[in-house]
Length: 154
Image 1: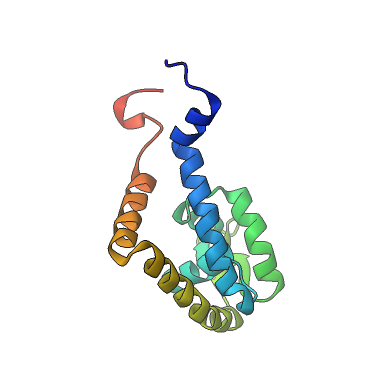
Image 2: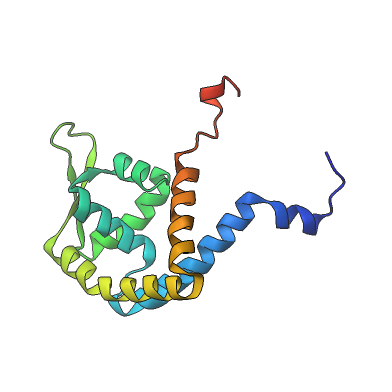
């Protein structure tokens, strides 16, 4: 282990770099989505449900690489505002399934303009090719097994 100071450790911390970048990009998208009344995470939830159809809370949490508790906090305002409906799953009445409502689909469609503006602004500032490379690298990060299960490590 090296005797790095706190500043160097923060600069080299992968987690800090990814979280800082995520906050920075989220602020851009939230600004552009504000007129729709949706935040970036809410827009993503509505988009996943529109693309994939009804999903259990557990499956959606897995798809969004988040935990069930965090997702639960994010879906409550969507359900309250009638953008999604929470119902028992047909295959298992104990599981809760999320359904996009017509109101939710309409709100998502309205928000799509702001999302497209944020997407264009990001690519204009960062570069279209670099943005595509970044998305591919981040998908690879999400697909990485950090648990060590595939290497027999703890």
